[in-house]
Image 1 (cartoon, rainbow, N blue to C red):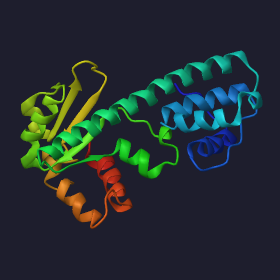
Image 2 (image 1 turned 90 degrees about the vertical axis):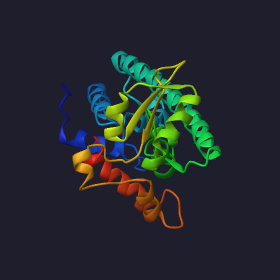
Image 3 (image 1 turned 120 degrees about the horizontal axis):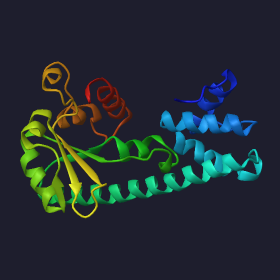
Length: 226
């Protein structure tokens, strides 16, 4: 159960969650510990940890439990950042392999959001790479990913129905690549709501990863991507 926040700490959490907002540090170790737990739950912990690091530990409440918790979270955050970097490397490698086969594709969500929307890329770590292709290109794209050292970890028939294929790196099963033919996975919902490769091209116009496209991806992912 999340520790409750006083109204002042709720406002402070919003400040921690805003990458551009100036930081005001909680006055007590207890408040800061509760804020850390809430930030972790709401997915804004990387931003909060960065801001606390920039402030400096000397300006934080001097408390053993707080320092131990910060050390634990910082170590985990470093691992997550490294994981994101490794995923990005493999994503770019697969994109080059797809281009070599003349398969139109684009990476969506994770690293694109991090690069386009955040001044500090580490504020927005990601746990997989999402690649979107035309439905007609799925089989060939799957072969490219398999040849890149990944193995399919989702059922093939079910994946075709969802238009979502999950691939794990053979040497490191924590590295997940998801290949999509559409960003709406439920086949019933897809008849009413759909977002595919050509749709994003039309939204982008002459650009790439435009704000309109990113907003559309976020809305559709929240409404129908699960």
